Amino acid sequence: MKGVGRKRASGLSLAQPGRGQALESPPENPTGAFAITPRLIQTYAAGEAAERLTVIMKNSISKLISVAWRERLIVLFALFVSLAQLVGFVMHRANSSAPYIESWPSPAKAAIFVSALTVLLSILLTLVARLLDRSSANHGEGRWDNAFGRHSIAISAALILASWLPYLIVFLPGSLPWDGAVSMAQFSTDAPLSNHHPVLMNALYAGCMLLAERLGSTNMGLLAIVSMQALLCVAAFSLSIKQMVAIESPRWLVFAALALFCLHPMWGSYAQTAVKDTMFCGALCLFLVLATRLIWSGYGTACWARLAVSGLLVCLVRNNGIYLVLPTYAALAVAALLAARKGPSGWRGAAGVAAAVCSVCVYYSLVSIAWPALGVQVREDREMLAVPFQQVSRYLRVHPDDVEEWEMDAIEKVANGSDIAAAYNPDLYDPVKDLLGDSEGNMEPDAKKRFFEAWLSMGLRHPATYLEATLAGTYAYFYPFGIVGSNVNRRAFYFYQQGEPVNTRFSVSYVFPQELRDGLEGMVGSLMENPATKALFSPALYVLAYLYILVYSASRRRARALLLSIPLAMLLITTLAGPLNGCLRYMMPLAACIPLLAGAALAPIGDEPASGKPGRAPAHFKR
Image 1: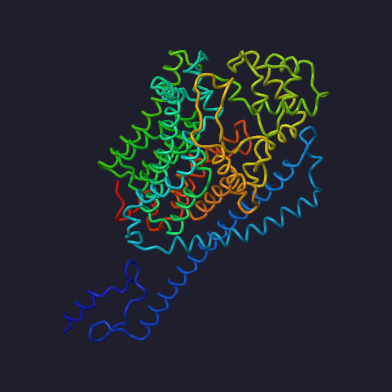
Image 2: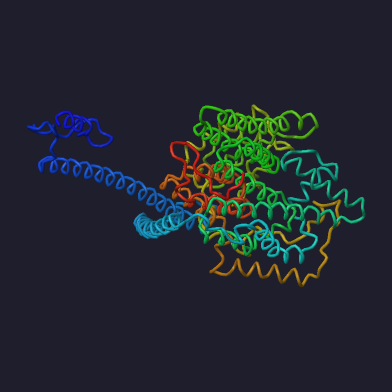
């Protein structure tokens, strides 16, 4: 009996599972057997309760810190939006020939406005975040196991194309605006070759027109360009919807995205317009779709290769594309290295990164070697330096008597000072930058150096003037109540055919009567003037929506959504440094990518990678 008792005693551990220390040694028993006494039970229960209380306290503290961090981000975003509305209100109504400080409200009024709007937005955006949390948590496997889920590409493409057909038919064969005509002129006239508009896009568009001209109908060439653009956008948007289904985005968001692509007039209006912006919109949306597939599928080589090809397309369609693609590649490469494990998967990720590097090398080889060898002008100082030129223009307008002689001499070496001051337009940099440099927009190195010395010297005396010039040229990307409507000095959409003297080669004309075109254009114009729908045509709406998704993703630690936000952040930055304030077509690619970015932010949390490792892909996800 003793042997049996000792054997049982030695086989029973007093330590809690997973722990190496016993709570208490058992009392001696005359028989040698282990006895479970009431005291031992109480001691064990007390230890278990203490440990559970510790875990609860740790979780509660962690949750409080997390909630505080989330709330702080939302409050900061609300404060930023409030300040942006104040600045936009002032800039939109200010006299551009006087210091903007004269148009500002009193400090007390400004503080009351910003404080009240910040509190209101904080409450509203917090409620929206909680609704999004609930939507993200309310998911289940097989939620898209229906006809739409199985055929989302075909259904989406059919609906989107059908919604755009009125624009494509009424404006048949398409509209050829100023930008499109200028880009084609390089290959249809004796105009010098330049990469101001990407030269491959110029060659593609002009090639379609020249081929159609040989066949006897330039209208067919314009129709080919419009069809190519429209089909690329339809395919990219449909794939975006399919990708949202694949990552199990909320059902309401998928159908809202489809409604956006079908019902918003900007898509059909630009589908029938021969400009590179339409092609760029489809190319960037496709790039984001493939980046999403890459992240959700575990950084496979095939996904990397497809992403590299689409990234090269983005770079070749618009010149700022390289600034979007490079940071995205770098971030994805870091994420892939963190996700890679020892073995074949690590080599697979390395091969994929190499494919992306190759695409960047191809682009720089074309721009730095091939184009100059073919006589294409790739350098353009005034395009890269539009912001400082605009700041100097405003300085000369507001402070004409506070310019030193050597500063004016430095300015005169690049353009006439009085012309620069007279050309100042707060919303548009083109009138100023078009005066600078030689016929190709370049300056001598010494003249450029002297100009920047003068620019810095004047800016140190009146930094507020430079800040005013910058804010006046960017506020409409954050203020949704300005530069929208038919009464502004620029077109939101292009429903016309550019003629001479810009378009001297191609004779194109609409097929259907003017009355039909006026009716459709009037409908779009009425929507832009309607207070209930006016904001839909402001780029600020999409910029603020993007920034809120960014804040939400950061506060919820949605790493994959933050990765996907990088090219869109670079698009916004390059646009703010551009020559045009509040331009809808510049932000159209951002609007096209917002649904997929939101879908990634609201994808099931169980798929979110932990510690850099790829998460579980949905059962019906196909690489």
